Amino acid sequence: MNRQAAKFAKPGRKTLCDLARWPAWRFVFLLALLGNFGCGRGTLATDEQPGEVVMYRQIYRIRSLDPALASDVYSALEVAKVYETLLQYNYLDRPYRVEPLLAASLPEVAPDGLTYTFRLRKGLFFQDDPCFTKTGGKGREVIAADFIYGMKRIMDLKNASNGAWCYALVAGMDEWRATTGGEKPTDYDAPIAGLQTPDPHTLVIRLKQPQPQLIWILAMHYAAAVAREAVEFYGKEFGHHPVGTGPFILKNYRPNYRYEFVRNPKWRETGRVDRFPVSHDPNDAPDVRAAAGQQIPFLDRIVEYVVEDNATAWLMFLTGQIESSPVARDNFSAVMGPNRTLTPEMEREGIRLNSAPTMDVFYIGFNFDDPIVGPNKKLRQALAFAFNETEMNAFYNGRITRPTGPLPPGVVGYTERAQPYPLDLVRAKQLLAEAGYPNGLDPKTGRRLQLTMELGSADDAEYRQSIELFCGFMDKLGVKVVANFHNWPAFMEKLDRRQAQMFQLAWCADYPDAENYLQLFYGPNSSPGPNHANYLNKDFDKLYEQARVMPDSPARTALCQQMADLAMADCVWLLTMQPRDYLMRHGWMRHYKYHDFPYGMIKYYSVDPAARRAWKQQHGR
Image (tube, rainbow, N blue to C red; front, top):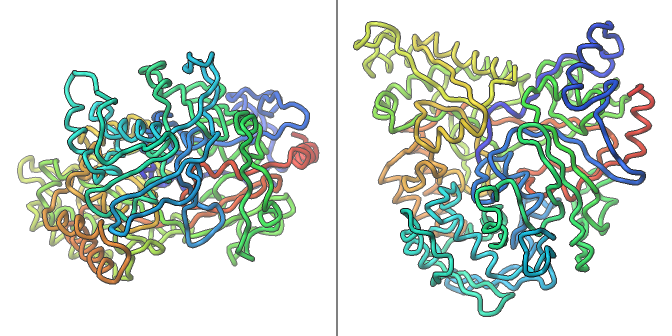
């Protein structure tokens, strides 16, 4: 799933202990910053009730709370608070595995791998909402047809959902999808051969070809149960009025400013009792192991502030206004010791550190529709050879490695390989000349070749600095790269419309399988699908179609490696980094464990309000 690159690191200026030594004018500046978020005397406005458990968080701008349109990490995290799927990831188990959520059990799979039968849990209800006019606003029970309706919305051409790749192999889906174009209203009552409901609580999915990844896909928000009443009631505003079965309800929001979620009372009204999982890992934190069997969710309310300026977010964390923050690049040496653990000073402040490798792949993409970079492989390769991994790694405090291919370690199908594009300016300049731009000069203009790179928000100072560093690498090659910043929704819209020459993105896996990365190069997945490079290679597509129907095996891994080799040889992406996650959190935030697929996992988090109050009193907050 897409996310803005470089968001794994948050810039800041001072540690908690440094704050105590700030001069008065800096405190005034800090209070003014926090005042923009409804603060008084340096503290976020709150209406917490006695005994209420509230979590405060930073988020980025989101595109939509419609499951069909949430194509980026930030939107999907919000959607997963409200909506639920047949399956979910176990929160604690590694390697990752899926388990039943709205389904009563894992599916019954036919021997040929083409038919999946799900039995739904009974007595689970959508949240109360005015859209349910027949029941006077009371939420109704979830049935199998709600999943079919959600899948159809994903495949409806009018919705232009990035998730259409999920159900391309469902029998009869292509034929139904072909009827959804044009101005004629989509017929959501038309049957699809591969989606059947023998009874209200049974869903049968039949595929044209085996799709071993289906159980992972059915844990994604694209597989959420969606109430047709809500879509028809709210119309174009549905993306602002989510109606789901999940643990939380969107209470109120101000776009680009603040979102507030409250506990969904239907969980207990209908007798639903979901529990915190049992830890099988002795390395899990004591509070995580001790929570086994407790009823979830722990939180009564979640308050999230849209803060794209990460310096502000860092200050909010230091002053206890939000619960957690990645370790800021500028503060890394101040808060981390030589062995990459928190300094004793930070530990005395009650700060905790969680660190883990990620499956995120950061890259510069080239639009193959573009007349300059698209047909010119040597130009793309020249840019790749000019990337300075050593300098970028130093910029990020040694917290990154440069990927050697589109598949990161940890996914099924990964194999170790050498870096195909190491820094080599001599070779880069030779390739640039062979590409038609000797010494970086464009023969058509007589001036330096100029390329444009589309990017997400410019509010983050560290993000801008990393882009300036990249542009500096290209400048040494003789190519001028112009950075064009947008807010996140506008940026994604530009990619969907195939309007970017170059762009920077990070891919966070939807599931831990090579196919999920390789589908980003599959021709039929071109924009508005996830193949934003609009790369088309018939040899690649043939290998992909062969491998995606195969279960994990050495033969499949070999095909995945061939696809990775093709994508790297064609230089579809200029791979830049794979980061390690470092999250700082206050000691009152409980039950946290890093997860590569954190969608919906907030139901397992908790905070200790008494510990937070004590900390704030101690620090005069």
